[in-house]
Length: 447
Image (tube, rainbow, N blue to C red; front, side, top):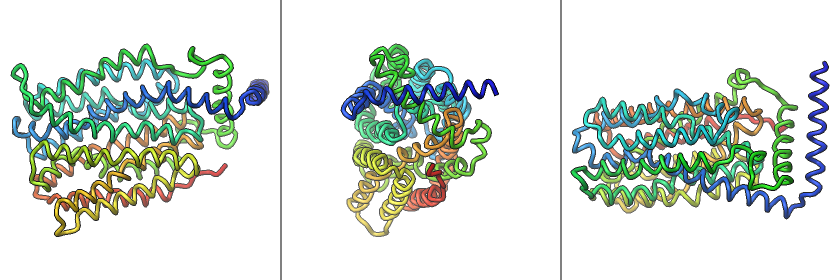
């Protein structure tokens, strides 16, 4: 009873303190503080995720030349692409918890340096087993980065701003791929120091992560209370606001990590992202190969078509994050984006269309294909307390990455067995439709 009473007194002082600070922060000062935090936190985080996603996905660009040089079949590539996600699984939940309980700055710096070196080492693989090994190690090195960032955002952004923060993160995906496609097209044609263009692709696109790892260690700030670039009053206001939000969630339902992992909502989200990512990751890695086959053009043309697809995704991500935060309805923004992606992707497979019409459908797909993750990842942190949310995010992202392994392995296997390009796109469209249907069944507490 004594400890409980002490806890109530501390909570009471925290709420009173927050209310006093709030009285000195009018709407103008509060908005200025939000902008200050966003401009300090978001550019670096977006850059880190941009490099992360490019190092994960550039094997799809390199495949256009790498497969011929090494005589790897689509089945070999599908397994090699997918095995990344098996390595990624190992530190998924521990990585998210380390950010919550230890240090995002130190954890992210370690991740960046190791994955940068391993990604560059992909340039020197010669056999399927070497390819599988380096992709597995890349997954281990990068594990915990994405769920760690989601947890990191809860240290800086209140719930009402988290959708926009996630949109800022997710927008790095289409930007990364839109920039990476033409860059990779240029690198594929170079032959420096006896190395092929696809080898330079991995080296040039991998080493920036090492540099950014060092920058992260010295620049990233773990929590507001450690931010020397905020005034004392700003630190107190932001910490108090986040503390009050956390206390409100605890007053509704305080859950342990194990209790959170048994919630139906967590498992529906995990299953929903599993099915969606079966299509999403396969689309990312196999799009250049599919576009080359559909267009009958060169490697460079296929990569430029891919860049156009990803370029269309930037506007959709930004709008989705803004709109879902403004309305507060993250779930239905997520579901609508998943369903729209499935329908538009399916329309691209209508028989008898010229490639120009197919490309129009794919560009429309690009507008919505990355609009679902930012509202989706706001859902686990909406009602769960810090450690429970961190563990749940780790579990959900584990399912997302199992889908990355299974989807790419199966897709490569089916292509090796004669699956058509249209059949492949139709299969991916079905994944988005089923994933949207599952997420629509999620029930979130209005409290």
